[in-house]
Image (cartoon, rainbow, N blue to C red; front, top):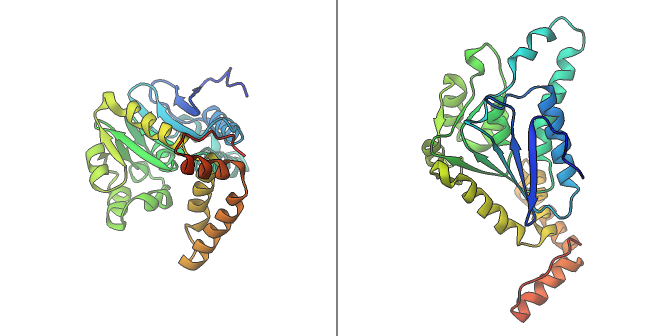
Amino acid sequence: MSFEGLECFTVEIAEHVATVTMRRPPVNAQNARFREEITGIFDALHDMAEVRAIVLTGAGRAFSAGADLKERPGLSGKPGAYPRHNRMVRAGFDCVAECGVPVIAAINGAAIGAGCVLALSADILVAAESAFLSMTEVDVGLAGGVRHVRRHFGESDARLMIMTARRITGPELLRMNVVSACVPDAALMETAMGIAREIAQKVPLAVRAAKRSFQVTEELPLQDGYRFEQSQTVALAGTEDTQEAQRAFAEKRKPVFKGR
């Protein structure tokens, strides 16, 4: 898969880790082209066996400052425009959440509105000390993002964030248990890449199964969820990589995985 010709992103792959960087100056605002590209990128990475973890970050001073509002005013007068637009917006988030490969969001700066939701669509979040999340919809007479915010924030903090449009800074996000780490800006990518490389050393099919389990069991009762996870274990037991991992453990050597 070639990632040439992208206008809003760059993609680099090394050591089984893909680094996806938003590059739409000045603040990585999300327009139709942005959403088309991110969906294509993550769909492609989903199918690339050599990619075992993904780091998503932004170039410049923002992670993503949200939707490009210049596109919105022209929608209201066109029949079917909002359904099409909303479908594209959802796809831009769903491609990250549904990608079979774990995604680490390295939040380097402002993540506002749709940018906040994009960060919250990742599996693991790490933030720079200068970064912040903010849902500003109530400031501009719009709505959205509550369900994504609820997945990561406690109920009181989720309502506080949505109803006040406050900026929740990196240290506050760590205190609220929203991010796994809050580090000095200069250490952000090193921290995110360290997590990604650690994941990339694990049994690839088992990692994908783990992500699938998080997706499927989120709304299931405990017994149904665990039953699904047991079915994942049964499916993995006969794979080459699981057998190799168990042999390597017994032989006290580093395993060699083939993704099958």
